[in-house]
Image 1 (cartoon, rainbow, N blue to C red):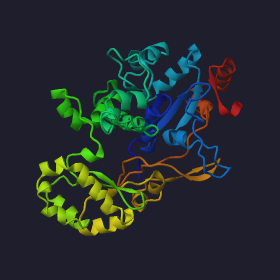
Image 2 (image 1 turned 60 degrees about the vertical axis):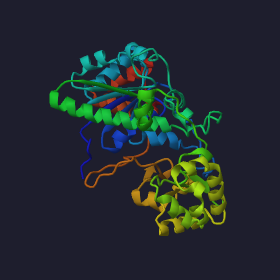
Image 3 (image 1 turned 90 degrees about the horizontal axis):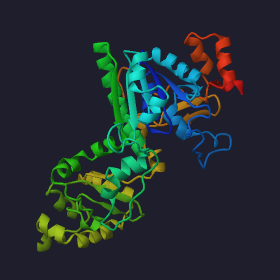
Length: 408
């Protein structure tokens, strides 16, 4: 089977997780993705160390791997003129250039849209930043916890009540979501470039993507500009769209907004007395007495484990979901059926599990191509393919303009 992007070459100048994750998706889709790193490497290299793995693999950086698998690496000093010339040489033969550089850094390294499209007039130039490349905040560096979760309103909206603690996101959630947005923009721009023969310039940001993920809220808030009312679990609108602990301390979440769900839930948890209680006869009454109802559901569910309740809910037609721990998802049969954790093979550690991208093809070769590269693993290979002689490459290495891992 052919891969969707097996004739596409991508040059990426980036670091950390957001833009690299987009490159990993494109690599899974078959693109030849070349990661340009500084001589000291992407700062995300070596950033994570798993705690509970055998000694022979505990030092492998699985978090870096998931965002950089299947790529080739070249290490370049972009502050040097020869280094910038090397990257321009690579860009000349590429279809896509991606970066997470702020505007002033793009201009400093000659990687701004005007310079890149002059080098390659058919290329797609794609930028991912914290806050965009225009406006009063365009200068500001951004990580997902600051730009995606903080400034976009997500953290505030997730607080339970106005005095509730601001929650903490898990690593790179906003980065990976924004990476998906960048992939969508790149694919659309590639089609335009192919149709018109002209360069395309696209961008996204952590901030913009985060607002889009809350589009249902902002469809209203953009008009009335009213503050969102944060609600604790005891003050949600309806009890059949809430989350509850079970007898083993594990939680379930219901999402049944229709009014007919109330008598169903009462019957399943054996609280038929509530159906006779005039206080709970309609949605307004139930909302007025929500703390009492939530406490009653908590008490009812305390008599069985989450999984015991799950069997009952399925049999009775309750729309529910288990609140799984990450360790449970890693063993979830549904995850296995969807191939969410594909197996890769590394020459350093052997077989290991990675994380699949959220898209599957019936008749295309899509999936991880291999582990992440070592820093500068493909420097000589790429420069040779770009037409440089061994003598010229050796000179660049000696000058410190590029680095190759085999030179260590």
